[in-house]
Image (cartoon, rainbow, N blue to C red; front, side, top):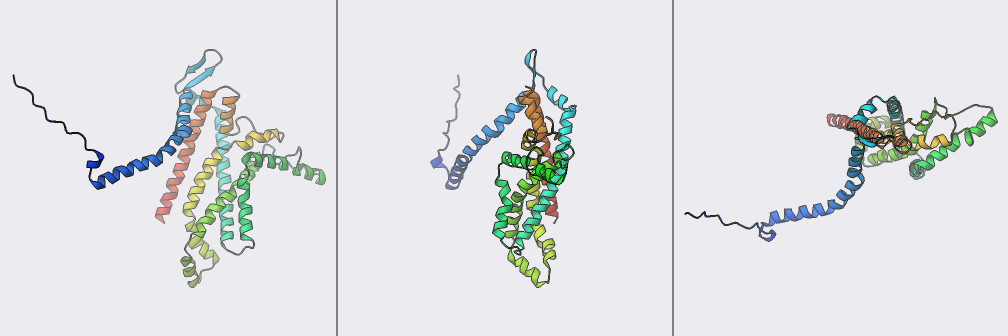
Length: 314
């Protein structure tokens, strides 16, 4: 019989036996993973796991008879034909299409005014414009509800004194009033982003423009507005995400104002909240939340790609 000859096994090279450059790369990767690990764990706990659980819940339906049953994609199919969902989604899209351009235009104008150095008390103005962003959303909603509501507050006193019948929170104007509240709260935040970009513009460009005889409007068109293009893309994305998530205002206002037209499906987030915590339809609410998240991501990604393409073309 012939014996089978086996090749001797070579043990894996220890870290000390590796060449110095490779050893440094391995050590660098280990250090990098050590720094990333805390964030990765937190990201998984507060983001990935909740999304996974919501996706799991969206596959089930809660019924009075039979309890929780597996529905597959039934919740998503039901959502596509839900008129209440589409009513709220359309309202949010309209709100975003009007409020975001108004807010960002105002923020850019304020940033340009502050950067012009022609305003007195620039620091005080900058802090005053940014200050509303520091007010918690719930507190801001309560404040505006007390001011604009006709039960009590400023508008009621004006109606009593002047004989008016002004009601900013009637069904036809409630969305406009919410837009005013959101614009007041976030204009300062976006203004600060634009102002920071303008402060980073090299002064040599302004000196060259002055030598060429360019006026203030020409400087704005040729230097300042192009410099803010990247910041504009970022603020548009953040604003779209924020407006699609609108919840605090329509949730709190009905307790402060009467006949506002705010229903349980006024916005998709409010609809999901009532489905989950009032209607005991957690699976349907999870499907709604995931669809809105996917829609928001798609819109934000489209804006980002379009903005980057324009920036590269320039």
